[in-house]
Amino acid sequence: MAGLMPAPAPGGDLPEHPDRLWRTPEPKAAYDVVIVGGGGHGLATAYYLAKNHGITNVAVLERGWLAGGNMARNTTIIRSNYLWDESAGIYEHALKLWEGLEEELDYPILFSQRGVLNLAHSLQDVRDSVRRVHANRLNGVDAEWLDPGQVREVCPIVNISPDVRYPVHGATYQPRAGIAKHDYVAWGYARAADALGVDLIQHCEVTGLRISGGRVTGVHTTRGAIGAGRVALSAAGHTSVVAAMAGIDLPLQSHPLQALVSELLEPVHPTVVMSNAVHVYVSQAHKGELVMGAGIDTWNGYGQRGAFHIIERQMSAALELFPVFARAHVLRTWGGIVDVTPDASPIVGLSGVDGLYLNCGWGTGGFKATPGVGWCYAHTIAHGEPHPLNAPFSLERFVTGALVDEHGAAAVAH
Amino acid sequence: MMLIPCPWCGPRDESEFHYGGQAGVAYPDDPGALTDAEWARYLFFRDNPKGPFRERWSHTAGCRRWFSLVRDTVTNEIVA
Image 1: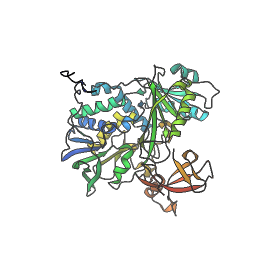
Image 2: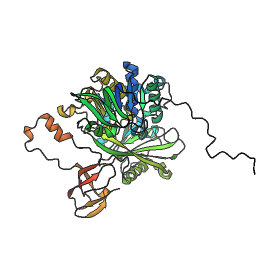
Image 3: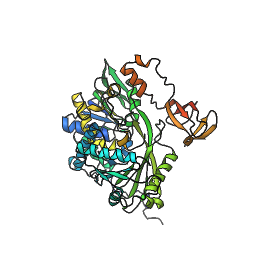
Protein backbone atom coordinates (compact mmCIF):
# COMPACT_ATOMS: atom_id res chain seq x y z
CA MET A 1 0.00 0.00 0.00
CA ALA A 2 2.66 2.48 -0.98
CA GLY A 3 1.78 6.17 -0.76
CA LEU A 4 -0.32 6.02 2.42
CA MET A 5 0.85 7.92 5.48
CA PRO A 6 1.76 5.57 8.33
CA ALA A 7 -0.71 5.67 11.21
CA PRO A 8 0.53 7.74 14.17
CA ALA A 9 2.09 5.71 16.95
CA PRO A 10 -0.24 5.02 19.86
CA GLY A 11 -0.31 8.13 22.00
CA GLY A 12 1.46 10.10 19.30
CA ASP A 13 -1.53 12.35 18.68
CA LEU A 14 -1.80 13.75 22.22
CA PRO A 15 -2.53 17.47 22.57
CA GLU A 16 0.14 19.86 23.80
CA HIS A 17 0.95 19.72 27.51
CA PRO A 18 -1.14 22.33 29.35
CA ASP A 19 0.62 25.35 30.82
CA ARG A 20 2.77 24.52 33.84
CA LEU A 21 1.54 25.87 37.16
CA TRP A 22 5.04 26.85 38.29
CA ARG A 23 8.52 27.45 36.90
CA THR A 24 11.36 24.90 37.05
CA PRO A 25 14.25 27.15 38.07
CA GLU A 26 17.89 26.25 38.55
CA PRO A 27 18.95 26.74 42.17
CA LYS A 28 20.60 30.09 42.89
CA ALA A 29 23.86 30.33 44.86
CA ALA A 30 22.04 31.56 47.96
CA TYR A 31 18.62 32.40 49.35
CA ASP A 32 17.33 34.29 52.37
CA VAL A 33 15.38 31.19 53.38
CA VAL A 34 15.77 27.57 52.27
CA ILE A 35 12.90 25.24 53.13
CA VAL A 36 13.82 21.56 53.20
CA GLY A 37 10.86 19.52 51.98
CA GLY A 38 8.37 20.31 49.22
CA GLY A 39 5.28 18.80 50.77
CA GLY A 40 2.16 20.62 51.84
CA HIS A 41 3.78 22.16 54.90
CA GLY A 42 6.88 23.35 53.04
CA LEU A 43 4.84 24.85 50.21
CA ALA A 44 2.37 26.55 52.56
CA THR A 45 5.26 27.95 54.61
CA ALA A 46 6.88 29.36 51.48
CA TYR A 47 3.60 30.95 50.42
CA TYR A 48 3.00 32.66 53.77
CA LEU A 49 6.64 33.78 54.01
CA ALA A 50 6.11 35.63 50.75
CA LYS A 51 2.52 36.71 51.31
CA ASN A 52 2.49 37.67 55.00
CA HIS A 53 6.11 38.68 55.54
CA GLY A 54 7.35 39.88 52.13
CA ILE A 55 10.21 37.35 52.15
CA THR A 56 10.36 36.15 48.56
CA ASN A 57 14.01 35.15 48.10
CA VAL A 58 13.04 31.64 49.15
CA ALA A 59 13.76 28.15 47.81
CA VAL A 60 11.80 25.00 48.57
CA LEU A 61 14.06 21.97 48.08
CA GLU A 62 12.39 18.65 47.40
CA ARG A 63 14.31 15.39 47.01
CA GLY A 64 11.56 13.80 44.91
CA TRP A 65 8.71 15.59 43.19
CA LEU A 66 6.53 18.23 44.82
CA ALA A 67 4.03 16.84 47.30
CA GLY A 68 4.95 13.24 46.48
CA GLY A 69 5.56 12.09 50.05
CA ASN A 70 2.96 12.14 52.78
CA MET A 71 1.06 14.89 50.97
CA ALA A 72 0.21 12.27 48.33
CA ARG A 73 -0.46 9.51 50.86
CA ASN A 74 -2.73 10.95 53.54
CA THR A 75 -6.47 10.43 53.90
CA THR A 76 -7.25 14.17 53.51
CA ILE A 77 -9.25 14.52 56.73
CA ILE A 78 -9.53 18.05 58.09
CA ARG A 79 -10.84 18.77 61.61
CA SER A 80 -9.90 20.74 64.72
CA ASN A 81 -11.59 18.80 67.54
CA TYR A 82 -8.50 18.26 69.68
CA LEU A 83 -8.61 18.21 73.47
CA TRP A 84 -6.13 20.77 74.73
CA ASP A 85 -6.17 24.55 74.34
CA GLU A 86 -2.78 24.54 72.59
CA SER A 87 -3.99 22.10 69.94
CA ALA A 88 -7.36 23.77 69.49
CA GLY A 89 -5.47 27.02 68.86
CA ILE A 90 -3.37 25.84 65.94
CA TYR A 91 -5.82 23.34 64.41
CA GLU A 92 -8.76 25.76 64.59
CA HIS A 93 -6.58 28.48 63.05
CA ALA A 94 -5.88 26.00 60.27
CA LEU A 95 -9.57 25.17 59.83
CA LYS A 96 -10.48 28.85 59.54
CA LEU A 97 -7.82 29.24 56.85
CA TRP A 98 -9.15 26.14 55.05
CA GLU A 99 -12.56 27.83 54.95
CA GLY A 100 -11.15 30.66 52.84
CA LEU A 101 -8.37 28.85 51.05
CA GLU A 102 -9.92 28.50 47.58
CA GLU A 103 -10.38 32.27 47.42
CA GLU A 104 -6.96 32.92 48.96
CA LEU A 105 -5.14 30.73 46.42
CA ASP A 106 -7.59 31.35 43.57
CA TYR A 107 -7.46 27.62 42.94
CA PRO A 108 -10.04 24.86 43.45
CA ILE A 109 -9.16 22.51 46.31
CA LEU A 110 -12.52 20.67 46.60
CA PHE A 111 -12.80 21.51 50.30
CA SER A 112 -15.98 19.82 51.48
CA GLN A 113 -17.22 20.44 55.03
CA ARG A 114 -19.11 17.18 55.38
CA GLY A 115 -18.42 16.77 59.11
CA VAL A 116 -16.56 14.16 61.11
CA LEU A 117 -17.87 11.56 63.55
CA ASN A 118 -15.44 10.19 66.14
CA LEU A 119 -17.10 7.04 67.46
CA ALA A 120 -17.16 5.91 71.08
CA HIS A 121 -17.23 2.15 71.70
CA SER A 122 -16.95 1.87 75.47
CA LEU A 123 -18.02 3.74 78.59
CA GLN A 124 -14.53 5.23 78.88
CA ASP A 125 -14.69 6.32 75.22
CA VAL A 126 -18.01 8.03 76.00
CA ARG A 127 -16.58 9.90 78.99
CA ASP A 128 -13.47 10.98 77.07
CA SER A 129 -15.56 12.03 74.09
CA VAL A 130 -18.05 14.10 76.08
CA ARG A 131 -15.16 15.77 77.88
CA ARG A 132 -13.60 16.58 74.51
CA VAL A 133 -16.88 18.05 73.23
CA HIS A 134 -17.02 20.40 76.23
CA ALA A 135 -13.35 21.32 75.83
CA ASN A 136 -13.89 22.03 72.13
CA ARG A 137 -16.85 24.30 72.83
CA LEU A 138 -14.89 26.29 75.41
CA ASN A 139 -12.30 26.87 72.69
CA GLY A 140 -14.83 27.95 70.08
CA VAL A 141 -14.54 24.69 68.14
CA ASP A 142 -17.91 23.38 66.92
CA ALA A 143 -18.65 20.05 68.58
CA GLU A 144 -21.68 17.99 69.56
CA TRP A 145 -22.24 14.72 71.33
CA LEU A 146 -24.53 12.37 69.37
CA ASP A 147 -26.28 9.26 70.64
CA PRO A 148 -26.35 6.17 68.38
CA GLY A 149 -29.67 7.19 66.79
CA GLN A 150 -28.26 10.61 65.92
CA VAL A 151 -25.10 8.96 64.54
CA ARG A 152 -27.34 6.99 62.22
CA GLU A 153 -29.07 10.19 61.09
CA VAL A 154 -25.75 11.77 60.12
CA CYS A 155 -24.37 8.60 58.54
CA PRO A 156 -27.07 6.02 57.75
CA ILE A 157 -24.64 3.26 56.78
CA VAL A 158 -22.95 3.02 60.22
CA ASN A 159 -23.92 -0.21 61.99
CA ILE A 160 -25.34 0.85 65.38
CA SER A 161 -26.72 -2.55 66.37
CA PRO A 162 -25.78 -3.45 69.97
CA ASP A 163 -24.75 -7.04 69.24
CA VAL A 164 -21.40 -6.39 67.59
CA ARG A 165 -17.98 -6.79 69.16
CA TYR A 166 -17.48 -3.03 69.58
CA PRO A 167 -20.95 -1.43 69.62
CA VAL A 168 -21.32 2.27 68.81
CA HIS A 169 -22.30 4.06 72.03
CA GLY A 170 -22.33 7.47 70.38
CA ALA A 171 -19.95 9.88 68.71
CA THR A 172 -18.53 13.36 68.79
CA TYR A 173 -19.53 15.36 65.74
CA GLN A 174 -17.74 18.35 64.24
CA PRO A 175 -19.91 19.65 61.37
CA ARG A 176 -17.24 22.05 60.03
CA ALA A 177 -14.73 19.23 59.54
CA GLY A 178 -14.31 17.61 56.14
CA ILE A 179 -11.96 16.65 53.36
CA ALA A 180 -10.08 18.38 50.54
CA LYS A 181 -8.28 17.20 47.41
CA HIS A 182 -4.70 16.86 48.67
CA ASP A 183 -2.96 17.27 45.30
CA TYR A 184 -4.93 20.42 44.50
CA VAL A 185 -3.99 21.90 47.87
CA ALA A 186 -0.31 21.35 47.13
CA TRP A 187 -0.60 22.64 43.58
CA GLY A 188 -2.55 25.68 44.76
CA TYR A 189 0.12 26.63 47.28
CA ALA A 190 2.94 25.82 44.83
CA ARG A 191 1.41 27.94 42.08
CA ALA A 192 0.75 30.86 44.43
CA ALA A 193 4.22 30.70 46.02
CA ASP A 194 5.88 30.52 42.59
CA ALA A 195 3.91 33.56 41.44
CA LEU A 196 5.28 35.49 44.43
CA GLY A 197 8.86 34.62 43.41
CA VAL A 198 9.59 31.46 45.42
CA ASP A 199 11.85 28.94 43.65
CA LEU A 200 10.46 25.40 43.80
CA ILE A 201 13.37 23.04 43.17
CA GLN A 202 12.58 19.37 42.71
CA HIS A 203 14.92 16.38 42.62
CA CYS A 204 17.28 18.24 44.94
CA GLU A 205 18.10 16.24 48.05
CA VAL A 206 19.73 17.90 51.02
CA THR A 207 22.85 15.92 51.94
CA GLY A 208 24.33 18.20 54.59
CA LEU A 209 23.73 21.32 56.66
CA ARG A 210 26.42 24.00 56.77
CA ILE A 211 26.83 25.39 60.26
CA SER A 212 29.41 27.97 61.30
CA GLY A 213 29.80 29.37 64.80
CA GLY A 214 26.49 27.95 65.93
CA ARG A 215 24.62 29.46 62.99
CA VAL A 216 23.34 27.76 59.87
CA THR A 217 24.82 29.18 56.65
CA GLY A 218 23.45 26.88 53.98
CA VAL A 219 22.86 23.36 52.77
CA HIS A 220 24.71 20.81 50.67
CA THR A 221 22.52 19.16 48.08
CA THR A 222 22.69 16.68 45.23
CA ARG A 223 22.66 19.79 42.99
CA GLY A 224 25.49 21.58 44.78
CA ALA A 225 25.89 23.86 47.78
CA ILE A 226 23.24 26.50 48.39
CA GLY A 227 23.79 29.35 50.84
CA ALA A 228 20.96 30.28 53.18
CA GLY A 229 20.33 32.94 55.78
CA ARG A 230 17.84 30.62 57.41
CA VAL A 231 16.98 26.96 56.91
CA ALA A 232 13.56 25.59 57.76
CA LEU A 233 13.12 21.83 58.03
CA SER A 234 9.79 20.45 56.87
CA ALA A 235 10.76 16.89 56.01
CA ALA A 236 8.17 14.84 57.95
CA GLY A 237 9.32 11.21 58.31
CA HIS A 238 12.88 12.06 57.24
CA THR A 239 13.36 14.88 59.75
CA SER A 240 15.57 12.77 62.04
CA VAL A 241 17.86 12.03 59.11
CA VAL A 242 18.22 15.71 58.14
CA ALA A 243 18.53 16.99 61.71
CA ALA A 244 21.29 14.46 62.38
CA MET A 245 23.34 16.32 59.75
CA ALA A 246 23.42 19.21 62.23
CA GLY A 247 24.04 16.92 65.18
CA ILE A 248 20.51 17.50 66.47
CA ASP A 249 18.69 14.61 68.15
CA LEU A 250 14.91 14.81 68.16
CA PRO A 251 12.31 12.84 70.11
CA LEU A 252 10.91 11.34 66.92
CA GLN A 253 10.29 7.81 65.74
CA SER A 254 9.49 7.20 62.06
CA HIS A 255 6.83 4.60 61.34
CA PRO A 256 4.93 3.35 58.30
CA LEU A 257 1.30 4.51 58.21
CA GLN A 258 -0.91 2.72 55.72
CA ALA A 259 -4.09 3.62 53.89
CA LEU A 260 -6.12 2.23 51.02
CA VAL A 261 -8.88 3.03 48.56
CA SER A 262 -11.69 0.95 47.12
CA GLU A 263 -12.85 1.00 43.54
CA LEU A 264 -15.12 3.92 42.54
CA LEU A 265 -18.60 3.58 44.04
CA GLU A 266 -21.85 5.52 43.96
CA PRO A 267 -22.07 8.10 46.76
CA VAL A 268 -22.92 6.09 49.88
CA HIS A 269 -20.94 7.74 52.65
CA PRO A 270 -21.92 11.35 53.39
CA THR A 271 -19.42 12.26 56.10
CA VAL A 272 -16.13 11.20 57.71
CA VAL A 273 -16.16 8.44 60.33
CA MET A 274 -13.25 7.73 62.65
CA SER A 275 -12.90 5.08 65.31
CA ASN A 276 -10.04 4.90 67.75
CA ALA A 277 -11.00 1.64 69.32
CA VAL A 278 -11.60 -0.60 66.32
CA HIS A 279 -9.19 1.42 64.36
CA VAL A 280 -10.22 2.70 61.00
CA TYR A 281 -11.16 6.07 59.53
CA VAL A 282 -13.27 6.31 56.42
CA SER A 283 -14.53 8.90 53.99
CA GLN A 284 -15.61 8.79 50.36
CA ALA A 285 -13.56 10.86 47.95
CA HIS A 286 -15.22 13.14 45.41
CA LYS A 287 -14.48 10.64 42.65
CA GLY A 288 -16.16 7.83 44.61
CA GLU A 289 -13.39 5.78 46.20
CA LEU A 290 -13.80 4.85 49.82
CA VAL A 291 -10.64 6.17 51.48
CA MET A 292 -9.61 4.32 54.63
CA GLY A 293 -6.69 4.81 56.97
CA ALA A 294 -5.10 2.35 59.37
CA GLY A 295 -3.00 2.67 62.50
CA ILE A 296 0.77 2.83 62.31
CA ASP A 297 2.95 -0.25 62.03
CA THR A 298 4.58 -0.47 65.44
CA TRP A 299 8.18 -0.77 64.28
CA ASN A 300 10.42 2.02 63.01
CA GLY A 301 10.53 2.07 59.25
CA TYR A 302 11.56 4.24 56.30
CA GLY A 303 10.41 1.89 53.55
CA GLN A 304 7.03 3.52 52.73
CA ARG A 305 5.31 0.18 53.11
CA GLY A 306 3.77 -1.66 56.03
CA ALA A 307 2.58 -5.13 56.92
CA PHE A 308 -0.49 -6.71 55.38
CA HIS A 309 -1.98 -7.83 58.69
CA ILE A 310 -2.43 -4.14 59.57
CA ILE A 311 -4.58 -3.74 56.45
CA GLU A 312 -6.47 -6.92 57.30
CA ARG A 313 -7.28 -5.62 60.80
CA GLN A 314 -8.36 -2.29 59.36
CA MET A 315 -10.66 -4.03 56.88
CA SER A 316 -12.30 -6.15 59.55
CA ALA A 317 -12.94 -2.99 61.58
CA ALA A 318 -14.41 -1.25 58.54
CA LEU A 319 -16.69 -4.20 57.76
CA GLU A 320 -18.07 -4.35 61.28
CA LEU A 321 -18.86 -0.63 61.22
CA PHE A 322 -20.06 -0.62 57.60
CA PRO A 323 -21.52 -4.01 56.58
CA VAL A 324 -22.51 -2.41 53.26
CA PHE A 325 -18.82 -2.36 52.28
CA ALA A 326 -18.64 -6.16 52.20
CA ARG A 327 -18.71 -6.34 48.39
CA ALA A 328 -16.36 -3.44 47.80
CA HIS A 329 -12.93 -4.32 46.46
CA VAL A 330 -9.64 -2.90 47.63
CA LEU A 331 -8.11 -1.11 44.68
CA ARG A 332 -4.79 0.06 46.11
CA THR A 333 -2.93 0.18 49.43
CA TRP A 334 0.12 2.26 50.24
CA GLY A 335 2.22 3.56 53.10
CA GLY A 336 3.87 6.81 54.09
CA ILE A 337 6.46 7.52 56.76
CA VAL A 338 5.18 9.47 59.73
CA ASP A 339 7.35 11.03 62.44
CA VAL A 340 5.71 10.44 65.79
CA THR A 341 6.50 12.28 69.03
CA PRO A 342 6.01 10.92 72.55
CA ASP A 343 2.94 13.13 73.17
CA ALA A 344 1.37 12.87 69.69
CA SER A 345 1.80 16.63 69.19
CA PRO A 346 4.12 18.33 66.71
CA ILE A 347 7.38 20.21 67.23
CA VAL A 348 7.32 23.63 65.55
CA GLY A 349 9.89 26.23 66.48
CA LEU A 350 13.55 26.79 67.26
CA SER A 351 16.21 24.10 66.99
CA GLY A 352 19.03 25.35 69.20
CA VAL A 353 21.09 26.25 66.10
CA ASP A 354 20.68 29.90 65.07
CA GLY A 355 18.70 30.27 61.87
CA LEU A 356 17.66 26.61 61.77
CA TYR A 357 13.98 25.93 62.41
CA LEU A 358 12.01 22.78 63.06
CA ASN A 359 8.61 21.67 61.81
CA CYS A 360 8.14 17.97 62.47
CA GLY A 361 6.44 15.40 64.64
CA TRP A 362 3.03 15.82 63.02
CA GLY A 363 2.85 12.06 63.01
CA THR A 364 -0.41 10.77 61.64
CA GLY A 365 -2.21 14.12 61.40
CA GLY A 366 -0.25 16.76 59.50
CA PHE A 367 -2.46 17.31 56.46
CA LYS A 368 -5.28 19.04 58.35
CA ALA A 369 -2.81 21.54 59.79
CA THR A 370 -1.28 22.54 56.43
CA PRO A 371 -2.51 26.17 56.21
CA GLY A 372 -2.20 26.78 59.96
CA VAL A 373 1.31 25.45 60.34
CA GLY A 374 2.42 27.19 57.15
CA TRP A 375 1.14 30.45 58.61
CA CYS A 376 2.76 29.97 62.03
CA TYR A 377 6.02 28.47 60.76
CA ALA A 378 6.46 31.36 58.32
CA HIS A 379 6.02 33.75 61.26
CA THR A 380 8.59 31.77 63.28
CA ILE A 381 11.12 31.93 60.44
CA ALA A 382 10.48 35.60 59.67
CA HIS A 383 10.76 36.80 63.28
CA GLY A 384 13.22 34.25 64.66
CA GLU A 385 10.76 33.38 67.40
CA PRO A 386 7.58 31.31 67.53
CA HIS A 387 4.12 32.59 66.72
CA PRO A 388 1.93 32.42 69.87
CA LEU A 389 -0.01 29.51 68.32
CA ASN A 390 3.06 27.31 67.87
CA ALA A 391 4.99 28.46 70.96
CA PRO A 392 3.59 25.59 73.07
CA PHE A 393 4.93 23.09 70.52
CA SER A 394 8.58 23.75 71.34
CA LEU A 395 11.33 21.15 71.51
CA GLU A 396 11.95 22.31 75.11
CA ARG A 397 8.64 20.92 76.30
CA PHE A 398 10.19 17.47 76.55
CA VAL A 399 12.60 18.89 79.15
CA THR A 400 10.16 21.16 81.00
CA GLY A 401 7.47 18.49 80.98
CA ALA A 402 4.83 20.80 79.47
CA LEU A 403 3.64 18.07 77.11
CA VAL A 404 0.52 18.43 74.95
CA ASP A 405 -0.86 14.91 75.23
CA GLU A 406 -3.16 14.34 72.26
CA HIS A 407 -3.07 10.56 72.04
CA GLY A 408 -6.85 10.55 72.51
CA ALA A 409 -7.78 13.17 69.95
CA ALA A 410 -5.07 12.18 67.47
CA ALA A 411 -7.46 9.32 66.64
CA VAL A 412 -4.79 7.12 65.11
CA ALA A 413 -3.30 4.34 67.20
CA HIS A 414 0.33 4.94 68.03
CA MET B 1 4.50 -9.37 57.27
CA MET B 2 8.00 -9.98 58.49
CA LEU B 3 9.29 -13.40 59.46
CA ILE B 4 11.09 -12.78 62.74
CA PRO B 5 13.63 -15.26 64.11
CA CYS B 6 12.80 -15.85 67.77
CA PRO B 7 16.00 -17.25 69.35
CA TRP B 8 13.93 -19.85 71.19
CA CYS B 9 11.03 -20.69 68.86
CA GLY B 10 12.56 -20.10 65.44
CA PRO B 11 11.11 -17.98 62.61
CA ARG B 12 7.54 -16.84 63.29
CA ASP B 13 5.10 -14.36 61.79
CA GLU B 14 5.51 -10.73 62.87
CA SER B 15 1.94 -10.71 64.20
CA GLU B 16 3.08 -13.00 67.07
CA PHE B 17 5.46 -10.32 68.36
CA HIS B 18 5.35 -7.07 70.27
CA TYR B 19 7.79 -4.33 69.32
CA GLY B 20 10.00 -2.81 72.00
CA GLY B 21 11.92 -0.08 70.17
CA GLN B 22 15.61 0.74 70.51
CA ALA B 23 17.73 -1.86 72.31
CA GLY B 24 20.28 -1.09 75.00
CA VAL B 25 18.56 1.84 76.69
CA ALA B 26 19.67 1.37 80.28
CA TYR B 27 17.80 2.73 83.29
CA PRO B 28 19.93 5.49 84.83
CA ASP B 29 22.20 4.31 87.65
CA ASP B 30 21.23 7.23 89.84
CA PRO B 31 17.95 8.72 88.53
CA GLY B 32 17.83 11.38 91.25
CA ALA B 33 21.13 12.81 90.09
CA LEU B 34 19.92 13.49 86.55
CA THR B 35 19.22 17.00 85.31
CA ASP B 36 15.86 17.64 83.65
CA ALA B 37 17.60 17.55 80.26
CA GLU B 38 19.25 14.21 81.04
CA TRP B 39 15.97 12.78 82.30
CA ALA B 40 14.19 13.98 79.16
CA ARG B 41 16.85 12.28 77.07
CA TYR B 42 16.36 8.99 78.89
CA LEU B 43 12.57 9.23 78.77
CA PHE B 44 11.78 10.63 75.33
CA PHE B 45 14.77 10.46 72.99
CA ARG B 46 15.48 7.30 70.97
CA ASP B 47 17.63 6.73 67.91
CA ASN B 48 15.67 6.86 64.66
CA PRO B 49 18.15 5.75 61.99
CA LYS B 50 17.44 5.11 58.33
CA GLY B 51 19.31 1.81 58.02
CA PRO B 52 20.49 -0.79 60.55
CA PHE B 53 18.76 -0.46 63.93
CA ARG B 54 19.33 -2.60 67.03
CA GLU B 55 15.90 -3.13 68.56
CA ARG B 56 13.89 -5.18 71.06
CA TRP B 57 11.13 -7.67 70.28
CA SER B 58 9.00 -9.83 72.56
CA HIS B 59 7.47 -13.09 71.34
CA THR B 60 4.18 -12.34 73.09
CA ALA B 61 2.13 -15.06 71.34
CA GLY B 62 4.81 -17.68 71.89
CA CYS B 63 7.51 -18.03 74.54
CA ARG B 64 6.94 -14.43 75.77
CA ARG B 65 10.69 -13.82 76.01
CA TRP B 66 12.44 -10.60 75.00
CA PHE B 67 15.39 -10.54 72.59
CA SER B 68 17.32 -8.09 70.42
CA LEU B 69 18.07 -8.09 66.72
CA VAL B 70 19.40 -5.70 64.08
CA ARG B 71 16.95 -4.80 61.31
CA ASP B 72 17.42 -2.46 58.36
CA THR B 73 14.63 0.11 58.71
CA VAL B 74 14.48 0.65 54.93
CA THR B 75 14.43 -2.94 53.64
CA ASN B 76 13.21 -4.74 56.81
CA GLU B 77 16.05 -7.19 56.28
CA ILE B 78 17.14 -8.68 59.60
CA VAL B 79 20.89 -8.40 59.43
CA ALA B 80 21.96 -9.69 62.87
